[in-house]
Image (cartoon, rainbow, N blue to C red; front, side, top):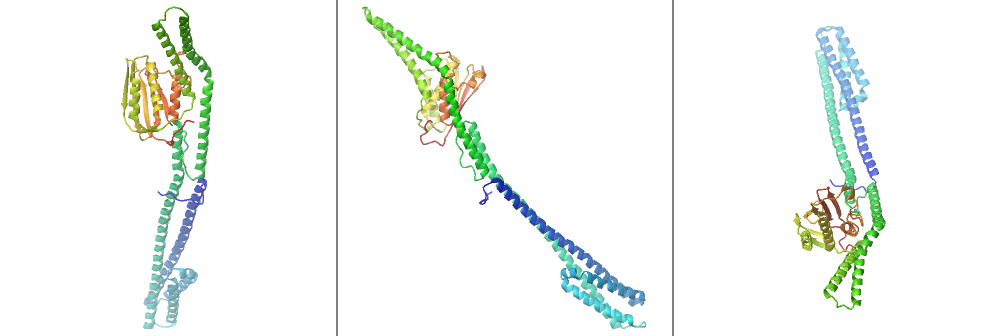
Length: 486
């Protein structure tokens, strides 16, 4: 149903109030009109009863008239005179109402004129003596009596027709007003529901995105002031959430400096010590007069290079975590990303570990290919280390078009991750490895990359039943024009 334009107000409360006033106004108008119709109907019924009394009196008049003509009983003549007086009294008392009835202005004068003439002729007949009366005069009385009956009967019939019309009018107006009220209830209810339900659905969608870790502001919600206020409050909340998220990440980084000092110091101290030791040995060899052992020198220099590379990798991991780098987003097919990653890691996998790829639905995704491949490599390497050199890793990818996301999962059949540490695995510098065996930055960097893709990464694991890391990335998002890290 098409939405009604409410130019005079943008407040939901005012719209509800206006709707209530309109509905109340229609109901009051309908009630007043119904009351007028019912009052008119009641008055017509009262007048109809009065015409009934009038008709009964006229019929009594004719009965006494006939009896007097047949039997010449003075009592019949007296009752006839009394009935004439009663008829004139009924007309006198109800004349104003009778005149307002259907065709009353035509019938009431005719009744008065006829009954007056009828009374005059009856008085003439009553004044005469003897049994033999004037036949012509009697016929005139009979004709006037018959005419009086017909006039009153037609008067009553016309009023009956008018009452039927009034009753039909009341019925029709009741139905019309009922339909009108129902229509207004549907229209106003639909418009008010549209003013509330649609923007609330958009707010629900926004809150669901927030729950999924997407902190993008929603577009224009609605012109209703209350909804706009909720939207503004939600936008303010999103800004504060973003600020708090940055503060929390920064505080976690600072809080983890103690762990970092021990881990990184040991991680750098070992290769540096080995480099220093190897260099000292070579230096002593140079000062001796013995012939140089080229094989020994080559071995020592190789150790120096290996230890330097180890230190370089540690420094690179720290820079990768702390440095802000530009990200380059383009459209890539999901299958290409997964297959290229498999080719990168296949040669370095232990012989007893099987890597299985499963692409259930393919499509283009807007992402930084190198960063997403780094995410997958980190997850696969973690799975390899967790399984201890043997097992199976299943990597699957699919496009969930109804949700607008690409889902990638990395599942291993290793020992799983204990519940008590599952909430900490994405924290910076957190590691379950022994000191010196890792800096604890791999999953933290992975989480950061996924977040910068407006995505979400989460863990499903039960001890003894392996672990599954699931990555959800929007197929498309608003920041297409060269997203940059904040």
